[in-house]
Length: 275
Image 1: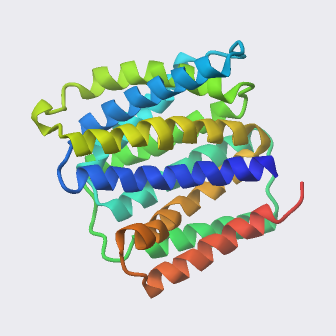
Image 2: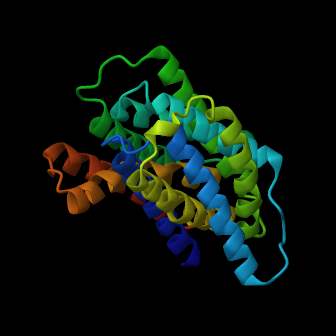
C-alpha cells in the first residue's frame, strides 16, 4: 500500500511539473534554460532543508552518476522543448524511458508475462492516440535530444531502485545536478527573461514537484520491477491533460477519453497481477 501511495504521489508531481512548465514558459515569463536552472537549484535547497529537519544521519549521499543522469535529462529536455512539439515530444520521451527501463529489466532477468506485454501495448497505444494526431515531422536535433532525455531519466530511475535512503540520495543527486545544469544551460539563458511569476513557478516546480516528487519516486522504485516502474509513467501525459481540464479550463475531448481508458487499462492489466 505504501508503495502504491508513493507511486501515485510521484506521478502527480510529474504531471504538476508539466503544468508548471507550461505556466511559466507559455506566457514567456521565463526562458527554458532559466526555468531549469531555478528548478534544480530550488529543488536542491528544499531537499537540503528537509534533510536537516529530519535530524537523522544520511544513509547515503547520492552519486555523480545519478547526478549526470538527472542533469542529462533536465538539460536535454530543456533544449529539446524549444525545438519540438509537445505531442511528439512526449511520445519520444516516454518511448525512450520504456526502452531504457524495460530493456534493462530484461537484460537483468525480468521475464514479463503475456498480460504484461498486453498492458504495455494498451498503454503505449493510448499515449500514441493522445499525442500523435496533428503532429508534424519533428526537428531532428530536437527529437534526438528528447530521446536522450528519456534515456537519461530511465537511467536515473534504474539507479534509484537501489536506494536505501530516498531523501538523502535525492538531495545529494540534486545539488550535484544543479551545478551541472547551471554550467550546461548558463550559456543559453537570457537574464532579461526573468520575471517574478516565472521564477515562482520554477521554484514551485523545483522545491515541491521535483524535489519532493523525486523523493517519492525514489521511495517507490526499490519495490517496483523495472517493467512496472516504466509502464506506470505512461500515465503522466494523460494525468497532465486531465489536470489541465480541471485547473486550466481546457476542453475534454473524445480523444482524451479513449487515451485515458487505454492507458488505465494497460497499467491496470499489469499492476493487477500479484507478484
